[in-house]
Image (cartoon, rainbow over all chains, first blue to last red; front, side, top):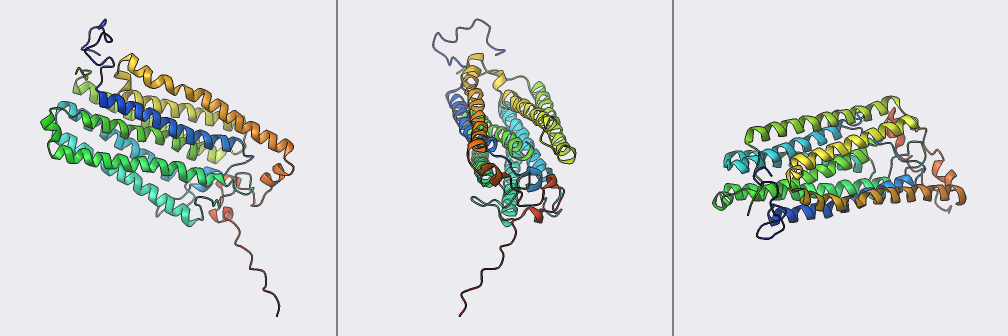
Length: 222
Length: 152
């Protein structure tokens, strides 16, 4: 906004009234619709939880860490959360490097972002495997409710559906970032003269982090 | 096409670090509250509900920082921000209506559905004591041996 004097006639034609390129605007609208999808999932989870007399305690269910055993609530999910925050930071740095036209910095920050995404997916794979071996899966909940009654069936259904849907987004984000990396290495953006594509990939990646903020809170903390 | 001018690199870098630190600190506070609840606040009551409320407010603060700074939405034109944010305000109705409906369904079933409350609150496992025990206790009891086959 700093370049445009106040009083610019945004709507009199000849320019983008939102001062963003088409692709970026459409990415925003896509993300908004995706937010509604995730919102619907999380709200249905909340509705079922509000309709239940008791619900499993996340600190009992999620309390294991690879090689450290069990009895460690919140530890593993903290690791996953920080991995995703850090990979979001490296993505911002890639976008900023793109604005400077600094190809080398774009490449390195994208590499770090991709590694962060893969690390997150690895953590999720471990957690799912661990829970599966404890007898948890769609349609099967071995975990008792907090009050000692038989565990609510939908606890695992919601957990695997929602973290699975989020994990699928992380996976697509990694694929998109890999494509961005290949395009950067092939000088596609250099020839175009701008790195705006990285910005759109970045929006998607931050959205994945944003959704995790909600999923993490709703499943592991509250 | 015009593009929003981006702040010079130094200021941009400072902003990234500031937001990173804010997000990390908020996450650590959330985790500390969650861990505190695990250790000390076991009873469903005012304190537990209050702490959960605090966690949700911190979550919304994190969401704000990610969208406003990492996704740069705060630096876009106001009209552009509004086309994204205003539709999301539907969530306010969405959340209130559905959670209220869930709570009402529970109430109705507890009141009118014979045996529902007994069935869903009957202790089939020893009191979970909020995690202060081995996981094996919350796992289902192994099936008792199959009924003996018909005698010959």
